Amino acid sequence: MFRIVLFLLAVTAAFGQTKFPGVGKAASAERVKAADKTVMADGRGLPVGKGSVEAGRGLYKTKCAECHNEAGEGRDKQWPALVGGTGTLTAKSPKKTVGSYWPYATTVFDTIARAMPYDQPGTLTADEVYSITAFVLHLNGIVPAGQELDQKTLPEVKMPNRDGFVPDVHPDVKAKR
Image 1 (cartoon, rainbow, N blue to C red):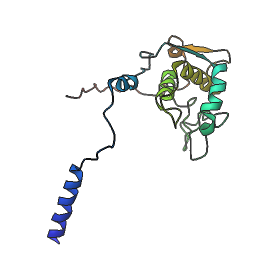
Image 2 (image 1 turned 135 degrees about the horizontal axis):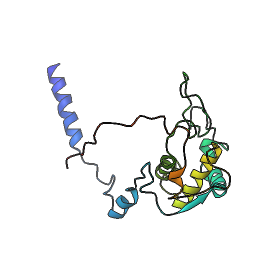
Image 3 (image 1 turned 90 degrees about the horizontal axis):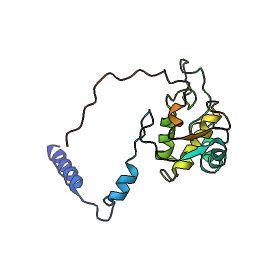
């Protein structure tokens, strides 16, 4: 039995050292720079651009509705709802949506820019992201139909749950490199 355990440990260690030629490649400096975008809650890091609720309506239909449905209600147990949930955060089964849970409109922008559309993340232009963000905020009753968002107006949007989070009082710890 002891020999079997030693053998399995040796095989596992050897497999962990195996290289997989042809799998993956180092990211270029251009790719790293393109992915290195951080949008802060106060709007720092937002790119230049603008978008409107109306422009977002069409973009949402072609880029988002397949997963989140036409009115942002999501697809049961598959893709999350973006709309609804108001007043449910203290319920036994809260519905955490853009309108009920998210504290900052800039976080909505950042999530869409980084992770959407699901099958092609990071492919939307800044103007498309501003427009889709405006439309999703409109679906939640947060901004009016005629609203246009940009790097100055987006951080000014007051989300319904902006006071629902407690600031972290712990200091940031920087990684040693």
